[in-house]
Amino acid sequence: MKKLKDAGIKFADLHVHTTCSDGTYTPAQLVKEAVARGVSALAIVDHDTVGGIAEAVEQARGTDLEIIPGVELTAQYENQEVHILGYFLDYRDETLLKQLKLIQLSRVERVYKIIKNLNAEGLELDPQVVFDISGEASVGRMHIARALVKGGFVGSTSAAFNKYIGDRCPAYVCGFSLSVPEAIKLIRGAGGVAVLAHPYLLRNDALIAEFAGQGLEGIEVYYPEHSQGMINFYLELADKLKLLVTGGSDFHGSLKPDIKLGMIKVPMELVEKLKARQKND
Ligand code: AMP
Ligand code: ZN
Ligand code: FE
Ligand code: FE
Image (cartoon, rainbow, N blue to C red; front, side, top):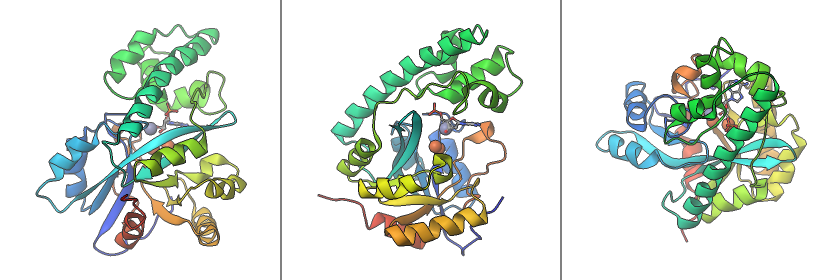
């Protein structure tokens, strides 16, 4: 796995999940782990929620760790989900909070739809098992995967994705109503900077120019699944389209055991460039 080489003493990890979505570390545990690993800036970007930020900011008080408030919004392009990261946003912005609440409702509805498809595949999964696992969190496919493991339907969460609920798999349902330009607008409206997450998952790099024309401001170049060739390609594309460059581990705790917090080391210079694009009016 290729990653950005350690760029010096200070570095950032700009993509981590907490128990507020589908990670296994609470925001406070994540902050402690980041401090222990020498991370200087950490962006909390849970799926369609900003619920973990206040706790992380509180826990980081008095340490040298900077918490960057963020979100990973799920937008839909045709029948594919597109993840748009928002950085340095006002996580108390009312329009943002209102929209996120609506997305939470659609996430619950989507669980029922996916389970209906799983039933059609012969898997009698009870939706309540999923909701017992997710609790107050932003519910998603990772919780369904865990429920499938718990019920003995699959041996691992990755098997659940590969066989049933991964993108383009038989039980997959997109089910998100926000379009990419709407997601970008929501982030920018809350003062944030809109960045395309893990662009390799698009499987269509031509879309990046289209999104840039719709207000996208950056792309996540440094990512565990990106080969050095992809990194070089996206760096060139970012330069051509005048997009900011970011990166992160997409840490989910024990659910993605190969991914370690801070394994992608983003130079602070890129964080400063990102911060400079925050909207303050
Ligand atoms: P959702 O927001 O419900 O669509 O779920 C997206 C999350 O599912 C991602 O952030 C990952 O945590 C997880 N995920 C998606 N595809 C896979 C996969 N093929 N293997 C493991 N986890 C995956
Ligand atoms: Zn996730
Ligand atoms: Fe994502
Ligand atoms: Fe993520």
